[in-house]
Length: 194
Ligand SMILES: [Zn+2]
Image 1: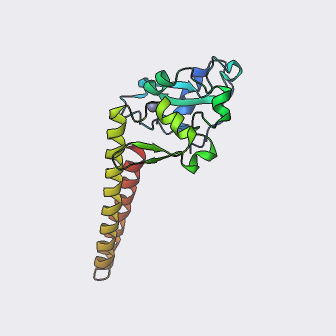
Image 2: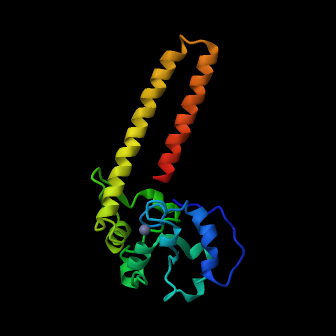
Image 3: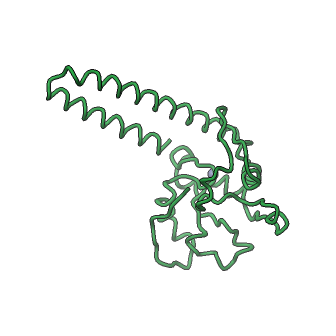
């Protein structure tokens, strides 16, 4: 779930919120999760209206309705909003800023595809082509494999360090602890940025 940390002042032009959104959304697309770095740059991202301007004109500059999204998700989502009938049946966009997103609207499979588990999940995976865009499926698989490798490496390194620490001079042991800490921080950064 995305939690906003910024409280910008009110602007008349929704594009003025760009610099706040980039921070609140950690430079990632709210919908597909791709990072600015992987999608070229922030120039390939736009200020997106979760509730489309066409149907919710009064929310055009409401910060809570503005999301940071890659231009592909923005194009594909466009003005689409569920009909009252669809809403009644439980269909609609998964809101990445809503606490209920934790409930898991889909499961990420080991091949990088998303397997929807709710009607909202189905609506979103299909409506945003989250499994149809091959680069997204590839990226999710790469990311998953990389994070698994990081976890496994970190565990092994920690085990080896613990074993080595017991037979080491104090100064060497301190160096080793510093290195391990650096290693942990680098892994965490990779996890956040990939
Ligand atoms: Zn996207």
